[in-house]
Amino acid sequence: MTATSLTRAPRETGTPGRRSDHRPPRAPLAHRLRIAFRDPTNVIGVLALVLFAYLIIAPIVSLLVDGITVSRQDARVTRSPEGSLTSYYLWRVFVSPQANAIFWAPLGNTLVIALGSVVLALAIGITVALLLVRTNLWGRKWFATALIVPYMLPAWTFALAWLTIFKNRATGGQAGWMEALGVSVPSWIAYGRLPITIIFAMHFTPFVILLVGNALKRFDTTLEESARILGASGAHTLWTVVLPILRPSLISAVTLILAKVLGEFGVAYVLGLPANMNVLATSLYRSIYSNQQGAAAVIVAAIILIGVISLWVDMHFLREARRFVTITGKSGAAATVTKLRPRARLLATLGCSLLFLVSVAAPLVVLALSTIMSAPGRFTPDNFTLDFWIGRDLRTIGAPNGILLDPDVWQAAWNSLWIVGLSSILAGIVGLLTGYVIVRSQFGFISGTLRQMLFFPYLVPGIAFAAAYLSLFAEPRGPIPALYGTPALLVLIYFTQQMPFASRAGISSMMQLGSEGEEAAQIAGARWLQRFRTIIVPIQKGAIATGILMAFISGIKSLSVVVMLAVPGLDVLTTLSIRFLDVGYTQAGNGVVLIVSALAFFGTYTTQKLMRTDLSQGLGA
Image 1: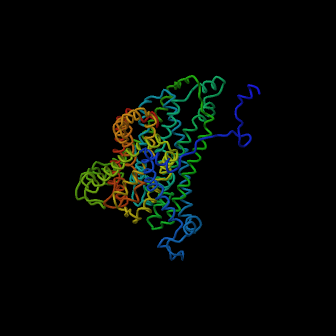
Image 2 (image 1 turned 90 degrees about the vertical axis):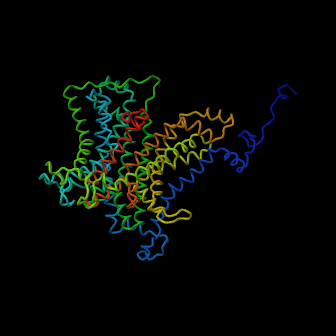
Image 3 (image 1 turned 120 degrees about the vertical axis):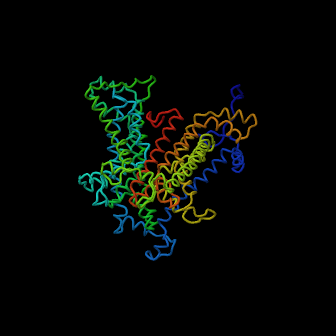
């Protein structure tokens, strides 16, 4: 026997071609769960999953169930007992003689408005972003901030200003400024798809400027210079080099605009309903208020489906866009500033000035003037008055006193501050907690499921989410009492609606914080709550403050998410404005919108100052 044979390894047994693997047996599931739940992070994660399953998934499921079960008022029509399965609502929305008015015409209007808004916003936004980043435009720094102000204001601010100028007696019953000055305004200019499209384009252009401008600042211009050296013209370089690389930013802008148009209620309500023109959001609103809960559920399902499809398209094209990403070992060349000729420079500056005038200055000035004019469109000294702000015993339908003396306005302002404020504080704190769980949890199921669940409200337009909450909380369910008509319901929906952004802020801040400090404190014997209170919170207090302020800004100007849930006596400022407008008290309605705009603007300004950042530097700033 040779030495080789003596040292030969034992022959492996088992299936030929496969290596035997003598791994220790896994611990029983119950034991592993006991070990896992000794970590408070996993316990908090499970509690968060249960909470948001109830606040996010349950309302949607409850509403969708309404779309396939017979309601009490339709039991006689369907000849089926209440609660039984039915396809009646699908037939009513998609096939019945009323289907065109309920769904297909609103869907067509929504898609036309969305397409027109996207095209206009992209055309204006890309042009302005190129001027601000790549040219020697006069006042570039000032325009970079001024042209994103529409982002800070409620979208229906512009609709009210448009209506003040262009409304006519033929459709609206009252004369606007133009008609009062003797100019006949056709209804297709005053109401309907054209003005709604223009207003959405003005409101969403800042998104394009922010996204594209931020991408252009990080853009490696080496490829541009190479194309120009090879003889490509400026237009050809822009079309074949710059825009393909900017495609992720453009797709994000398109998806964002589409999602917002689907759920935006105020603009279509102000400019569409007088002309009997519905979009999906207003058709849903009408179905709810005509007690057609089943049809409303089907419309909500269609809106959510469109939102999910748009997100899928966004993700698909973003994956494809990775082919256009440029990564080099050297830093890219700095963006070159094109020296415009004096005439072109003047025209570019005048164009940006006109955009600011049309999208910011004019709407706010129009609304402000409308609140101090007794009769619209009459610019004589005797027509101007402060009565609508500080007057008493006014002969108005909406309220006997001026805006600042009206107890309903002060009550709505207080409701807005404490309801939106409380929900924003909760969103900021819970956003950090969920971000902590998602980043620190060692269980992929908990972190992954929680992350996706918290993003879901972003896919559901505000008006659809409000309808889902109305379906779930309008009556008692188990230990949960009926919450409709209570402040608790408004706090819950504001809180839940802001969680996609609050949780993303928490995730971002926690990913930048290492775990070494916590580990050292744990070794020293500190419990989890003490570690979180003394280490995490002090370090992340800036992120918490930002999450709270941004949630407050978004909530204070929101209308779609609460228009069906706020009842008289529990109005917030946005719903009170709508009530004033419904009774024809336009001065008070416009005045309340100005108050909302001021709160949103100064809230955004405060956030920038506290965080020492500049929104004009891009959404990532």
